[in-house]
Length: 430
Image: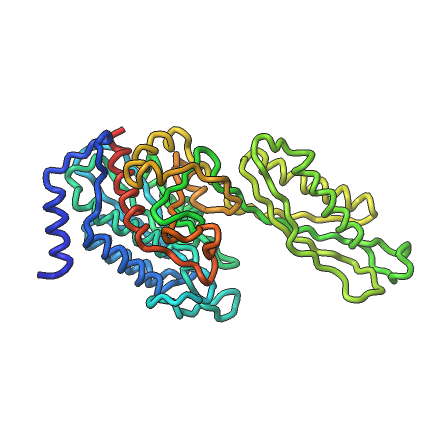
C-alpha cells in the first residue's frame, strides 16, 4: 500500500462521523503523517525557489496536488497563479485563503540540508534565489489545509477557495503581477468570496505563536521620485544660474513637516524617507538637475492621499521659491493591510483554540507592506503573523525575513495548517 493511500485511509478514518462545532473544546488537528507531508513540501519548495512571475515549477507542483485531491483548479491567473476550489457537502459561504509563491534574489547562507543553490535573473543579472521570506512555508501550510479539508468535504458548509498567488514581492520591472493583477483579471468576481484569510511567518515571533491586530496591521508602501531642475553655472558664480542642489536640500527638509505638522498623526503614524540623492559631476560646477527618490509608509488610507498631495505641493513650491522647478512622480504601491475588526474578533477564539491562549497576542504595527492588502480591501480580511523562531531563542536577535540566514522552525507548520483548517470550519458555522 502506498504512503499516500495509507495517509488518506488513516485521516479519513479519524474524520469519520465528523461533527465540528465552533464552540467545540478541541480544534481539528492534522495527523502526524500529514504534518510530515507538509514539511516535505516545504523543503522541496525551499530547495527549488523561483522569482516573481517565474513560479513555473512551483505552480505545477501545487496544481498536481490540488487535482489529486479532486479540487476544481484554475491556472494561469496573473501569469503563474492558480486556485483550487473545494465544494463542501452543505450550503454555506465562500471562503478564500491565500498563500504567496515567489522567492527573493538572495544567496542563501544557512546550513540546512535542503539549502537553495538556485539561480535566477533579476534586473538583467544572474542572482541567487532563496525563500528568505517564508513563502515556501505559506504554500506548504495551505496545501496541507487543502488536503485535510478535502477529507472532510461532506461535512463542510460552503465553498473554500485556495489562492496561490505569485509575485507578492513585486513583479519585474515592466510587468504586472501579484494580488492586484489577480483581482484585475476577475478572481473575486468569478468566485465571490465572503472573506479572505492569510498567514505570514515571522522571525520576531516564537514558533507556534500568533500575532494579530484589529484594523491596520501593515503599512502602505509607496515610492516617490522628484526631479529638481535648475540652470547650470560655475560654482564660483552661483548667481549666474539656479542651484538645484540648494533647492533639493530645502525640499528634503521641508517635506519632513508633512508628517510632523500637516497630517493628523493621532489617526495613524507615517514616515516620509529619502533614500537616493543624485546630482552633480564636479566640485566647482553647479548642475542643471538633482534627482531624489524615497518611500512613504502609512497606516491610514485618507492620510495616504493627503501625504501624496502635500508632498507634491511642498516640493513644487519650495523649488519655485529658489527659482528652480520640481517634477514629482508618486508610484502607488501596496495599500494598508487592514484586518476587518468584526472578522478578527469572531475568529480570535479559533486562534486561541489552535495555538493556545498564551501563544496569541496583539501584534505591533509593522511598517513593512503586503499585497494581501488588495484582497482585504475587496472583502473582509484577516491576516496574522505566525512565529517561526525556535523556542528558547530570542526572537529579537533572530535573522529577519529577507535575510540570507533566515531560518524557520518547522514545528510552526502544524500550527499554521491547523489555523487555516479551523478558520474555514469555524467561519462557516458563525
